[in-house]
Image 1 (cartoon, rainbow, N blue to C red):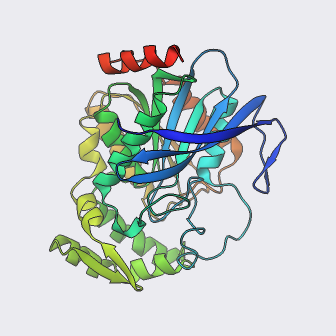
Image 2 (tube, helix red, strand yellow):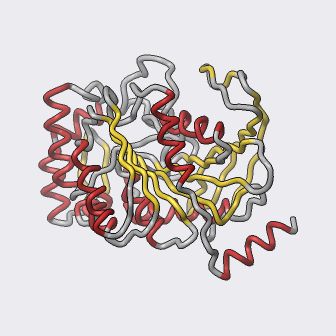
Length: 343
């Protein structure tokens, strides 16, 4: 746990407006912009702290495929030529989740992955295992915060972030619950092929140059990654293939067999990146491992759940919040808890 943080915050109340969109987070919530150290990179993040008595339960939010910002949407700030302009000013999935959790007294941390938003690094060069380490460092950085309850923590992974969330939870006994949104269960190789076919059929996300190029060159990418080649040019972008090769050989279904936690899954019925049957397979694998997962299927929603109403987002937050049972802490976290209590 080598994460450290720095930053400052402001308080907002019910009805306050932020980033051009109406957001009701009540009654009083503090939004803190900060940075934490993840390996050799400094990552930018937002900590949302609802008003409450004592230490707050909290959730780490881990984003999905391709470059994304901490709001959960495409990283148009750091990669403007990769994505089409937004059609509207809707809030991203993670901002909506942070608001929903705050309304239920649960804090959240969401961050710009390496090479996205205000974080260091280059997204196209980051391996899957580095992304897992970065999520662990985010958790480590937050464990020195006196506002947060080390015994009641969860991690939510969206899309590709599901494998990150599962990997983190398997190795961390203090994570009490896991949320998976639009997850893939089987190998990334097959999931990407099926997703490319679905996007070709429906046109979903094909307005983005990086998505269109990825789908058009997917077979070459798969072949090169299977041959363990190190790089591939994609629209003049030099992709490091380690992340893809690792994804091919780290299916979430295999990880699920090693997990013993409370799990909530949510999947948009029109997901064009991971078919809804993927979360069904994943739920079955979790049950076989002795878990009792809850699976929510959202009618009319795609991969980012942008079409889902606030009630559906709230239902996911309700289900995960209810499953964030207190965990026994290992000695090192007991010591951190005692030190932060004295601050």
